[in-house]
Amino acid sequence: MIVGVLQMRILIRDAMSLKDKRRVVHGLRDRIRNDFNVSVSEVGALDRRQAAVLGVALATNDQAFADRVLAKVLDLVRRTPGAELVDYELEFL
Image (cartoon, rainbow, N blue to C red; front, top):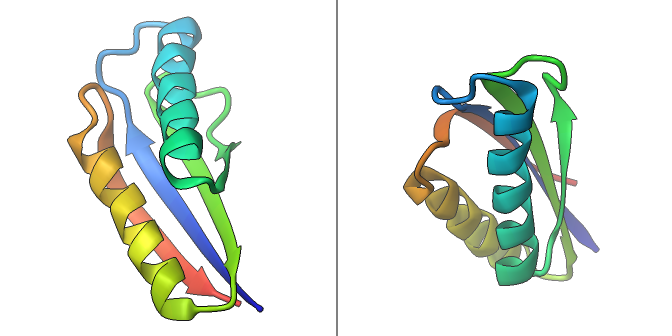
């Protein structure tokens, strides 16, 4: 079994409050879950209004498949208005 783990640091420049941040993060999280059938959660920077850390995990039997899916998740985040991908880490277990 292969587990692909993606951790993304995201900047939300337009967030003037935690409520603004949550709106962007929840929308992004729901879209990632629905489009790619992966687990996703906000795992860091919970109290910072313009920053978020999202963790994405995928279990499969094919590392190439996991790599393709997580690359598509990154592309989705890069194209999301209001969210700027700052950095990411990708790991396979």
